[in-house]
Image (cartoon, rainbow, N blue to C red; front, side):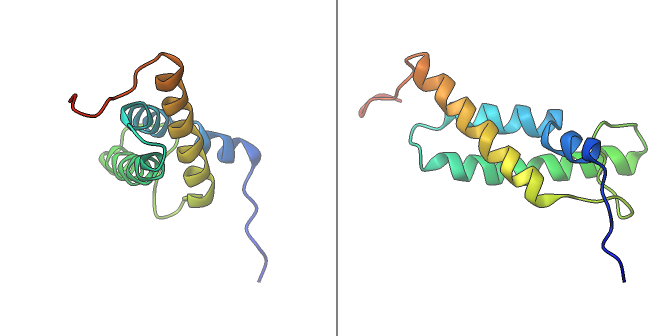
Length: 104
């Protein structure tokens, strides 16, 4: 049995999936503690895979489809979700948006 070979462009499409980028960056931006960035990345990963699967199952063309026949590349998507969430958190910190205790 041979190991399947996945082209580099498929790996990049999985890492730069628009739904993953938007969800992870937004949830990372909303995180008020760095520890919540990991939770934001997990939620973004699950949400983007679910939404990509729905878009693919309806039959719409998509940049990073999720299907039974195609590779899912969860390690690539998970690593990208963490990086995008950390980037969103960093932008929020850099912009000075910090939550203080007692404020909502």
